[in-house]
Image (spheres, one colour):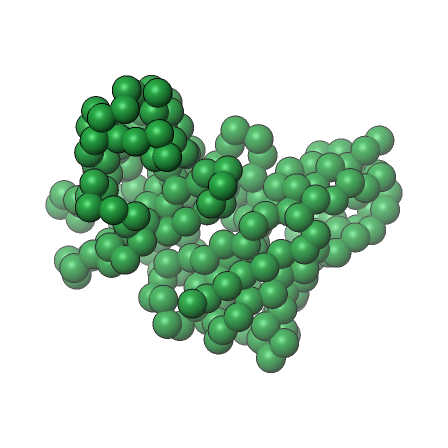
Length: 112
Length: 111
């Protein structure tokens, strides 16, 4: 059974600081996704990582993938309040077709 | 263009009643997925449709849950004899290749 684990689950940080969210998964994966969810809203796609060593950046967020370590990271640079949300990683594993298995989510709060 | 739409946005029902949730995928997307998000269980896969192939129903939690997709487009998720543990947000997603785009969800409350 594919397992996806995120840490930390809760993150409170000050504006201007940097931090990293980690996503570990338990089996070979074709693709790794990061989503953002605001309270009461649906999932917004942030990044799709397709191969080992893939790195993608958008604004203050940068995601990377190490398929050998089965690890993805979401790095936040100089956080701002608008980044406060819950971030999910999800894996699209070879053995489970196209369905996504999600991590537990990281609830990020950026304080002024 | 238009994204994935779902209706209703909120549904309150009494225990034991049947409910139908609707999903309109993005036009041209061949794959459609249903997921459930609840406090205790996080985000869980329910069912997956791809073109004309038999659906992957492996995530449906019980035989009270069923789904169909008509004409390769609109999908309906039906929950029979609802129970309180069915209370959750039901999310639909569609894709053309691999990236899944999610709808706004239907919040189901079973009283």
